[in-house]
Length: 273
Ligand SMILES: [Zn+2]
Image (cartoon, rainbow, N blue to C red; front, side, top):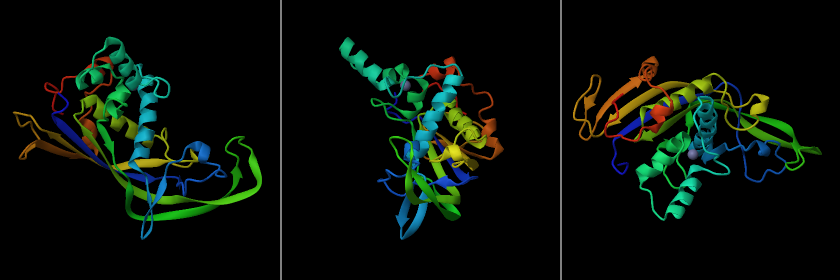
């Protein structure tokens, strides 16, 4: 079922910094006070230094915040650190001496693994690196080093760190074979970013990493539709619709993320948004 391509959602958007964004300059950073913050932003060197937010980092932030959000909606989520769905499924397969197909693996996964993937099942959401869309400004500060193990500041250990003072990043998320609730989840997370509930990078406890998501464009593609719903254009292999601005949110007004919607596994008969 999922070996076939049914639909795609291509979300293009900007992530504009509204507070400084910490960029991790190198891997060896035992004196780096932010290393305990698990910072993951890096410079991309292409002749000159250009800030980039790696897609894997954006995905990580979205995944961990999606977990909290889905839990708050009262839906069950696996313990991704200690017993993720991938492990549970592998154990079941061993005990029952059978192999689940991809639909069965999908059906047995929690809502988060259904979107972001597990060790046994590919993610259906691809997050792309975010690059500057126009001018950006890099800042530099000197900070006191903090011992990674003890948390105590090391006397006299000063170091410089660079961060993004301002940047309007452009990025993209693609969902393949998505269910409507999964697309809504991404947009609900955009709202939470804009509400200041989700921050990126390091030093977030000091107010770094606030982002505004804007300039959102959504392209919906359906590959096996026999009809051409209103607003859609027929292409060679698919029908598509492009939506932007406030119109994007109208698409989700009747979509719920609840026990019924997250259980859906049949893309063949899924509604066209
Ligand atoms: Zn899971």
